Length: 313
Image 1: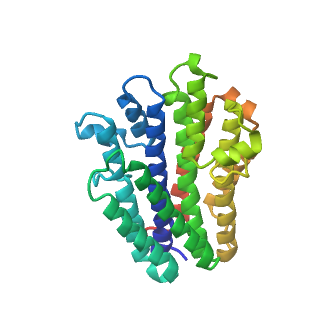
Image 2: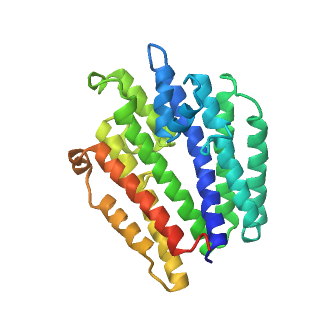
């Protein structure tokens, strides 16, 4: 399966994952703001920057407040990464490849779009925000569940998985990078109660709090958390887990088509980089520098997949 169908599947699941991740990031910002003693509006500039949409927001010349930032991330049609835009993009791509999807997947995707459209038809009040963010996450999980439960394990499924895990890895990397270089109040806060609250918030934002406690208990050590989110192959939103899934699904495509395109080599190199580092080596290199390098390589990998499988022909 090459060309437009592969492209539609890849982007359907990237957009779906992006919508969920944006909802998680809004929730992270909300929780982080609650740990601040002073005005929290500066927090939202950091969240917009993490999401990669700060420049677009600043072009609107609106003042960055909690209300304007949340509305931009959830509802704005001008923000190509907003939840509503992402869900609409996922549904549009699903329509393009509808014959490649099972009835259950299409119904789940279409229902998610309609529910999200209704929820975000007007600005979200602070009272309604937690329930709406939870519903967005649940709807994305419903589409994934239908995919896992009904889709044939063929190239269609592989492109869906690759799109999902590329987007998820990018999100985890951005959130972790922001924790250290944007959201941490000062060096003096490391190890303090506010730092521990923020670490717990980061784990919650990627649904990792319960898993981390099972593995490490209730002590929030920065190196343990960084290891868990970067290198731990058991954690389904860690960089290592996501890149390994991309590598495996690309391998399945290679077997189907009898080829070994350049994207496979990029995935194997990135997987090896994650497997061959311990967390001390990551910190010695510099966490920010390490994460930025991974983000660059994820971008290169995504572009190479589009070339190798002729998405736009």
